Amino acid sequence: MKLSCPHFNECGGCSLLDMSSEEQLHLKENEMELLFSPVLKEHSPAIDYKDIYKGAVASPDPYYYRNKMEFSFGDAMKNGPLTLGLHKKKSFYDVLTTDSCVLAHPDFNEIVKATLSFFSERKIPYVRKRSHEGILRHLLVRRGRNTGELLIDLVTTTQGGEAFETLLPLWRDKLLSLSLENRIVSILHTKNDSLADAVIDEGTEVLYGGLSFHDTVLSLSFEISPFSFFQTNTRGAEELYSYVRELAKSVLSERPGLIYDLYCGTGTITQLMSPSAEKVVGVEIVEEAVEKARLNAKENGIGNVSFIASDVFVALDSLLEKPDLIILDPPREGVQKKSLDKILSYEVENIIYISCKPKSLARDLPFFFEKGYSPVSMKLFDMFPFTGNVETVCLMSRVDGK
Image (cartoon, rainbow, N blue to C red):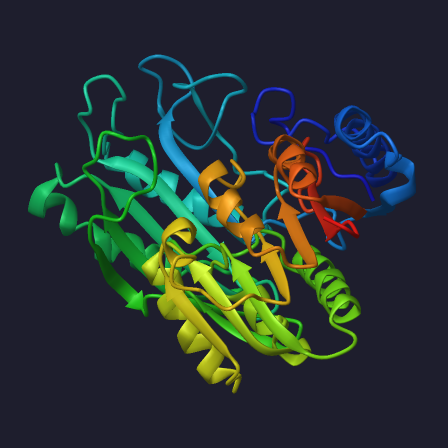
């Protein structure tokens, strides 16, 4: 079944909604070949991209796959009525009310409608980007794909004062009265007076439930806080993590060893690798995520993992033992050169690089070649259907004699 969206071609959220899953995969496969083939040809001519390419995996959920959305308050035209949703394509200012989005679960659309109606009726102003005056900034909605739990967080400035604070219980009650498929377990209010147009936590209060929600991945349970990193496509992540786990098992087939999971977020991969290793060490700069990772590992009964809350570059100075495998899952900008130099100095036999921005991986590949590594396999995972983005998993091994 092919779904449509009234905002397609106007909204910046997706660009490939008019394509089937097969057409999208074919397009992304071609783009990845065009991206990586020249890199291989320049730095390692003996390797042909088609020889290392292991195929593409479609998202198990083609629609409604996003478990997290950050909606913005604004207007669709200058001095127009209040809107809540996503930015117009190529626009920094104009915001469309996207209450029919097919990327996120329909419950998200109902929450957007109810929130927009509530604050529109009371004429609450949104924050103007030039003057920084106003109250409403963002609405964050997160969902446990496998648990059906919902977390909702309203992000505002403090300019509304006590008068605005008195409205929050009424907004909360309106949300709780909605007829939803999933179950609301957390309603929060986050204050953010920063100048940046981003969701920044400068103090969060609980209006209902707790400060987090839960989801499961491949039989493991995870408690997730509002701002912790967690893959936005849960079932797609299960496909990707299963593949990474099999790669780890194959390169550690002779004996379980030590694994470093760098940029580990809430420790999902760290814990999933634990059966294949003597010990797994996860490193993540976001302290909140590391706290959750430790808690989740304890609740899952996993004892051979540990976590370090630090920048990877700094943490590697204290990790003196040579690992048997390194897993990299960096943010979109990839691995910083100074960190990559330290990572490669371990001279481990195998490195698994997971990239949500293939251009960053293509940029980093020459540094691996310089240190004696060659890509052995590359597989694509369409974690972001209807967008131009794709996740790549690349296994790199040291060349004999290097």
